[in-house]
Length: 112
Image (cartoon, rainbow, N blue to C red; front, side, top):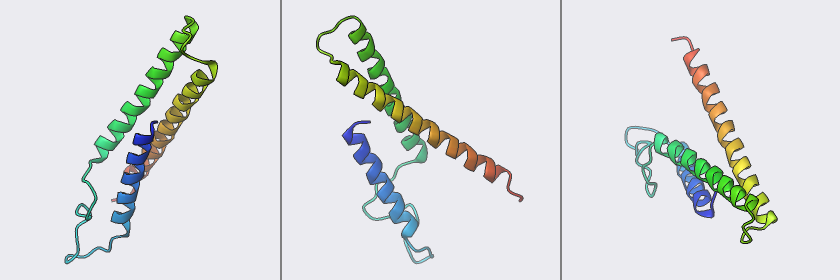
């Protein structure tokens, strides 16, 4: 994940924290009207995250192929760092998916 993506995720987490801490009531702002927070859909955030992980994996794969072909512009250390970034981002995405699936299953099993 690039620094820009990390900063975006942190900003979104701060906006969600502000929404969670905001008191509720008819005279107060609704949860979607937190001042200073940009409105984003959950599906957009999830889609952007998946695309970012995919891009990281593809870049890592391309770099590995170039290294195997003998490209002198790629060092072993650079390749290993890039591959580890891709691995960590994929593991994080898998973990988030598992948590979402568990939460969905818990909600579906709740008695009505």
